[in-house]
Length: 219
Image (cartoon, rainbow, N blue to C red; front, side, top):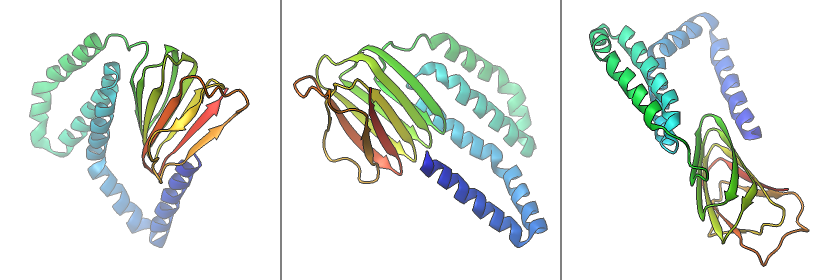
């Protein structure tokens, strides 16, 4: 989180420096450029969020709304698209209805967790799956595994790109690295270590990505 705050602060400082050089003209240029490109930036974010939301179909509604907003923005900047928007908006409504209808219920024990530019929190229960994949891009994922059990070794593959992953685990679980971890994603282990049972099933961690970090906290 400190890295995220540093990055945001750096962006704000750079923006302020850019505007202070010539407040009037530069501010006007910045505003005009943002007014021109914001629909496309929103569309890119919606596409990325949509791919991640495939892990849970119910989350597709959010990216779909963003995509519609960005499309409307593009339409108002490009008058030739207005007729297409008017003609095909019922199709977008049908897609939204299908997503809501087919979303169903999330599996009790998911095998894939993901977040893009937001924070998600998961409290998992019962038996942990043998393979758990966590993807975090410019966001944070909080995973509470304190109410889960290990029926055998489980592998948690964590990929972070500018993101943070926190895992709360029972104090007695042994945690071992499975393969070489990413040199750009530090892994920190916190909490009590006196209760670790090395003879029990293990949680194996695999890390990948860049500019993120992983925290495993024992409870």
